[in-house]
Length: 583
Ligand code: M6R
Image 1 (spheres, rainbow, N blue to C red):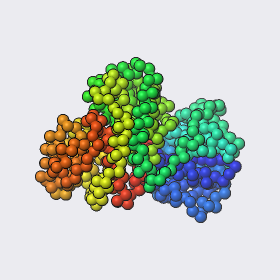
Image 2: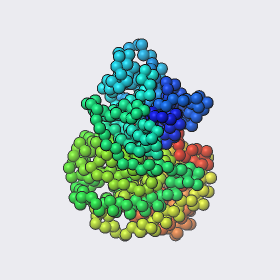
Image 3: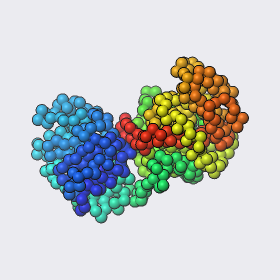
Image 4: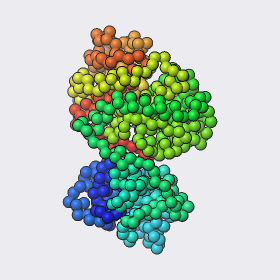
């Protein structure tokens, strides 16, 4: 799971590679490397480490680059890509499954120096070249031996100013412009330099020279490819006055929600009516997108009463899934590139389900595979922690419930909800709480019903960008075991936005206070201000049904503030990547 980039043209390659890699860092940022004109330079750490005296001397007009999220082997310079074997240099996005077998099979004259799965591919290609094959033929032969997922860019010192690209289950795009040919994992990395962009399908390959690309189909015959539509400027995004992407994205939550709901209403009108008459529903995603699916399931149970499952994409098992021709399977993903979600969609298709992708970025593999697509309009996220996309995805589920049930019990006032979200973005109580929590090492997030789902998402935000261990619990479950962990000073954050659960939540509050917990209560109910919690954070009041859209926002902001207090780069927390393109 990584970002790859290639350039072959009339200008010096390194600046294009560096700039493209910066845009691909959302795919991983633990090490990076480039190869230009046969010289390979690799570093542990983020792409910025590649800007140094050594790379300043790279004058070649053709090269490849890589930013890594380690799967096999530690994030070190030796395990960074490009991987080289003799004249061959290769960058890889994906994961090889039979690399251990290949390691054992490859002759001893190709010694392995790294711990990566990728190095076996470099040796396989070199074996072909040593046997007299061209770079392209050797890459094809190697691809036939490999199991798993890959997008490769390969160069050979024996064929200067040439890049060979091939893909299986990992994306690869090729763009052409005045300055030459560009290749990348994502349009975002190359769009501004391109007049035309081509998206490779599975098993297709490309041979790039300065005069242009030649494409080959899965049968290795040359093919003509049609270019795809793209927006040249769509990735020109900066912090726009904020300190980082996450802060900016939290401030965009309200607008993203509004635009999403307005856009979806229109998009849904244009879809076949029978799509919205399913016998069963299955919602699927990972991480935050899965939490949105859990909220969706709750809404369906309450409002629609069609059997509905929310499934973690990584757990989607053909043997267990309740999917048939009358099941609407909804796949939720900000990026549309999450490998687990893509794989789950394939399984559901195989079982005959009707597949609907709900994605946020402009173009993605998930939407290419799905029968139908709906777009959330939150605007692309760059920070690793998902914020505005979660609220937009939640908005989708409210609208789906409305569509399937033929209405909602209380109408959704989009403008008012947007204003409510915006009022929660920068609460002074949240700043104060972040200051108080900065030295703490664990936290519990508790809620009942819809609030339990908010607690789950709030806890994930806390974990991923503050490194404070946290757990979310259905509040009533605490006394069945987890209460044993509460001791004097334990941090417990409680959500009370559902009147029907208020009394029971007050019992939970008493139980944790009795054990010395430091408590924070988030609620729109002013009558709870004196309930005994150490901190009361007043939320704007909306009908209980819609409170999940509001109450998550201060928690996103808390996680952001806490990461600041703890000196963590919230846009790029350790060990993570924005888009998880391996299973
Ligand atoms: O791009 P996706 O929505 O498919 O990503 C799914 C998860 O990887 C993602 O939501 C992840 O959990 C976030 N880092 C959470 O903030």
